[in-house]
Amino acid sequence: MAQLKITQSRSVIGTKQNHRETLRTLGLKRINDVVVKEDRPEVRGMVHTVRHLVTVEEVN
Image (cartoon, rainbow, N blue to C red; front, side, top):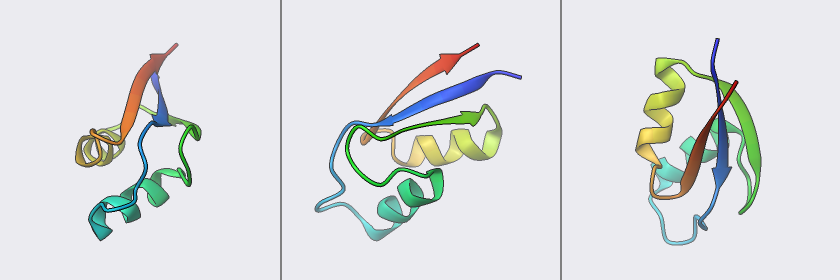
């Protein structure tokens, strides 16, 4: 199964509480943190919610 490399590229200061919680759920705590998650609809939905705060790459 494909995987996604998710990197937090922007700060959460001044963002909505929901966006901060979504980043924590993904496992991101600070700028430049990186996590690798399976490419599933649930993860895609979370990434879509915080798309302005993260960068996403597909990993084989």
